[in-house]
Picture (tube, rainbow, N blue to C red):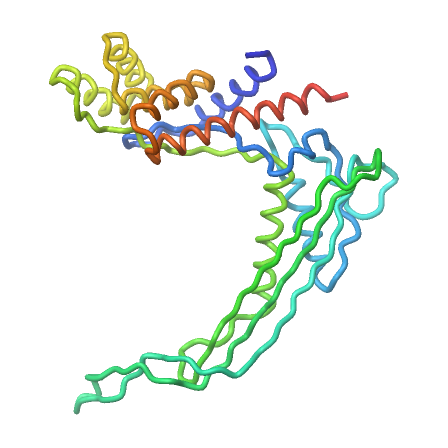
Length: 313
């Protein structure tokens, strides 16, 4: 593993040490997810410009806030330039945003009380047809990024969204504010674009596997003791599982938990190998499949991070 990747993993592990350990049979994993669009690996400065449509400015503001706030391994990811500037950015982000609101009369079934007793308590309910009104908000954002150096479009995406709400006579609710619904759609779109353009950093508490089926009594007792140890001393639990493996134990739970230990300490290649062994012992097991994907994504994100750091002027 080269110097840049080692430094990146060390930074993640150090950050993990800042949080208290979870009090459960879990190991805490810190990692990275790759950006949805690898074209931005070498983009450092980004202009937010030219967002048209009635709601274009609102999305532009949301994007400026989100992209400016991105920190990966303690470093700002983008230098975001809003509006006109004398500085030439690496790329510019533009688009168009529209939200159309329409209403129509409709009929829907609602559960209503049709009979009450002498104390005015409902004794019979029935689903009945009621006159209602449905409001539909159709939202569409089209976004593209253009690289300044060659004028090439490096990102183009459409973000359609639709939310409808039906309110009937006698309902205890009214329509939610159209403005608030559109704001939530804009926020959802900004979140999706942020995930496309930059990697993510996460902390996840992953449950260990506890099944001892197929182990001898001695093996099972050692394994169970290690499981209990995760609540107070994860490093010691990992050492005990390594001891079990050195003594010849081969088991799905052991290989998976050893993989988690390797992933936690940043030895991602070793973690991937152990998860693959676990997958061979139990093909298709969900926890193993998720761990393989998570580790592969982390490795890819670190490769992209190394590429970005290597290209730094």
